[in-house]
Length: 478
Image (cartoon, rainbow, N blue to C red; front, side, top):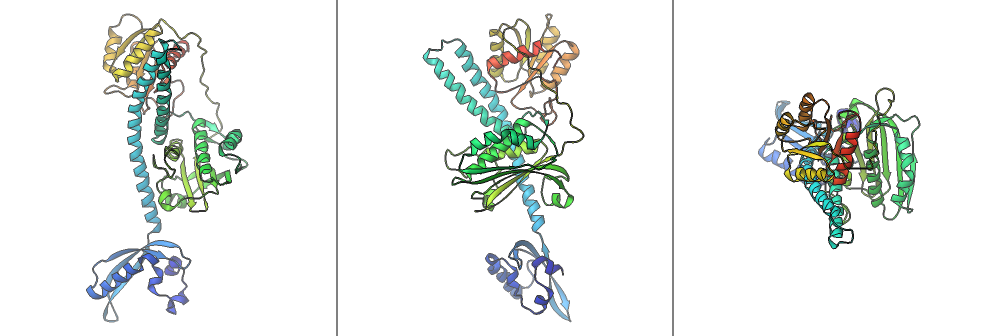
């Protein structure tokens, strides 16, 4: 019965000897299997365990393992063969290896992105300060402007790397996926073009999810663009939502999936599809099937990182020539919908000030830029390269310090620890954090906590001045 379940041949077919053993082996492996069989006859049992690609009666390929042992049968030596289906086990192992590979690349890209953000902060900052001291018709002014635009393109690539490595700051909200799709419909129609039919199929009573709405829009746009590029001659794009309950059986065969209730977003195209080789690599950063200049290879890796950072997982179903379906699963939001916390935006007309700001940044180039910027806007500025040095300044400085502007990740004392120490010494000080990416020092799994003032790198000098002014004029310490 187990043999029948595995290969699809009935007991009658087996007993009638209608099955040649080679029929159970995938065609490309039959010669190798015969060589093993001949070796077994000549040399006896040399390899007790052999793996092959099997072939069922229905033509499905499966991973099988033969375990061979010598026994006595009717007084004669014989070989007992046990066949084991390893298809699911091998699939899970491949998924795990791919996830580990992506995780390792994510850690690497996160570190690189952090360093690049410091470099881009300096490039953008000094170029903008130069422009502030030039007339707009000066020939160098345009060069500076072009430098800033190029650096901003680099910053956009860095943001995609941070999304992949799951180190972007996210601000989760309770979201209805149906409402999100409805609000994006007109934009999506413009993106995919008139040659592609576009259909949104919302499921009634869809469960709400908790995710960053801006990131979710980025996921949908990236997948829509990917689908458009897969249908250059036209086709159909479907965006469908559905409530899904994942059980233990499903999650056992899908690495990264956790049993529970999910809202599913499926994005299906009728394009050219993908081969198995391509499908295995699509979430890797910089992998692309498009020609030179056709893309950065970061679109789908960004999608992967965003979905994972928001607590979900993503699967892909595709065959060459039959189209592709991406399914995104986001956990159902627990409990009732809560009132969302809104960030109060202070209207700032005058960016200048006369308060005292303590700038703490371990990267000297970036620190000098921040100091120069704030002095130019009228502030009294103190500076330190480490948290320990900042503590020393705070303890010896007789005049008041109104604002601490500190990097998050520094050697020794982190920005968060420094803020906590300074607040115990000077309870009235306000705090503004900055970083190329943020770890647990400020945020829980990169989720921005309410009330935390944060300025992501790279930033423009004018953006720094505006943020400092906002924090000083807003109530609360952080």
